[in-house]
Structures are given as C-alpha cells and as structure tokens.
Image 1 (tube, rainbow, N blue to C red):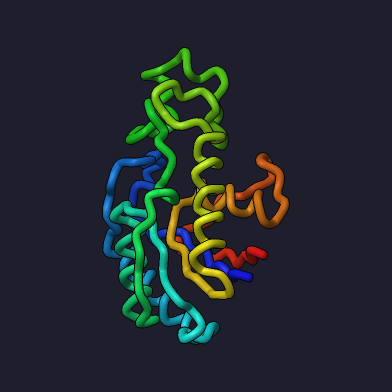
Image 2 (cartoon, rainbow, N blue to C red):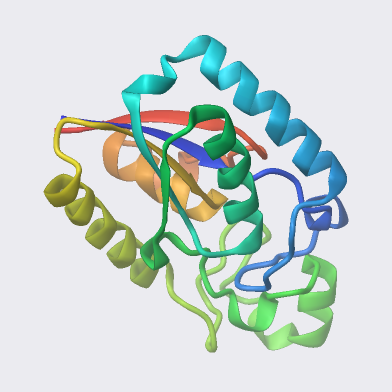
Length: 186
C-alpha cells in the first residue's frame, strides 16, 4: 500500500489574474513562497516527517519551488516526474477566459471556464489521464509500502481524486494553492 499526500503548488500570482498557465513556467511569487514555508511547518506538525520516503514533483518551476521548501522541512529526497506535469492547454495557455473567447471565438463552443474539451493544439483530458495512470503504475512498482508527498497541479489532482476517491469529472472540485489531498493506492 502506498499513501500519497498530494499537494498543489503554492501561489504564482497568475491565479488571481485568472490566467491559465498550463505549461507556461511561472515561478512562485513572494506570497506563495511564504505560505509554502508555513504549510511545510504545519505538515510536519501534523504528520511524522520520517514517514515520508520522498517528494515527487512536476518539473514546472512553481511545483519544484514548492517541493524544495517542503524538502527542507522534511529532509527527504526529491525527484522530478514528467508524467505529472500540468496539462498543455494549447490555445488557452497564458490567457484569461475572456481573452481566450475573444481571440478564439470558434473554440468557445465545447469549452467552459471549468472544463476545456476542445483545445486543438493542447492535450485532451484523456491524454492527461493516461499520463496519470502511467504515473500510478510507476509508483506501485517503485514505491510499494511507502508514503510519498506529490507536488503537482490542480488538473492532475482532480484526476487522481477521480481515480482513487471515485469522484465524477464534473463533481471533482478544484484544489486551492497548497491544498492537500490524501490518497491510498493498494
């Protein structure tokens, strides 16, 4: 059995502007770094740091910077994993919803602010789910009977919750920055 503590990265500032980052590699802002330090201290107060074998993080700056802060608090190894990188949002990357619908009015059909299924130059949700399933198989094979901290992105977390907490796609809520989800893989 593998216990996952799945953490969304800290704040970048793009969230407050309503910008969809996707694969745009924005770093944490000062607020994000400060809150990550507080969250890391809270994590070690609530969980035994010796029980976390490793931190696995997406390669994006915002996740790596968050993971590094937690690594300092936990004192464990950290590994970068491409399979849990944020979704490529194609035409929507770097834009707010209003900018996206203005620039690509034909793509407004089939997409909503909450769910984007029609992004021709981006990844489909099914492609991202495929990556997450490969990640889970890797975890099962390489980290049996351990506890891991996973630092990743909202969409990846939503997929993990759908796979392991039986949440429906439309019922799977967003994770807040530094929101923690606990999951168990048998």
